Length: 165
Image (tube, rainbow, N blue to C red):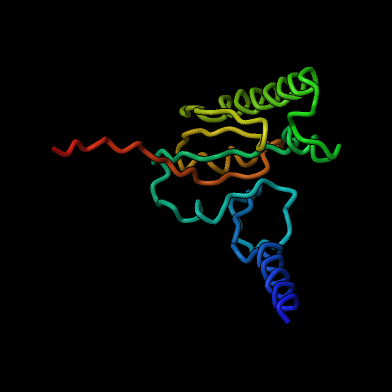
């Protein structure tokens, strides 16, 4: 009985993770179209948290840009090893390749919009970068072919320590 209950709980957890129910916004040539997304689109996707985030197109928002190319951890997973078990030369060359594509996307975006700032670039677990852009420029960023998705970035500030006597 206990084993059956554990199996049922496991199945429910797997199904809740495998069947997302959030809404996504797909960038298209005609503007932004809203659709219920259960399958990954071939177009870049603006996450639901960006949809309707603000009505001011000039407001600066910090977003995470995910690119199409696989991060380094996926290569390790395909080989059935840990990232630490990959040769340093392989990791260095893949990192360089991913950063070159990221820099190309950043350069392409720079040609389209006037104001944005790149904060961090990621290659190991996630292939992408964080940037601050005008909300109105998000569809331009999503239209770049290498861009897979855009998500609102949570910014956290370190609290100041409060000295108590």
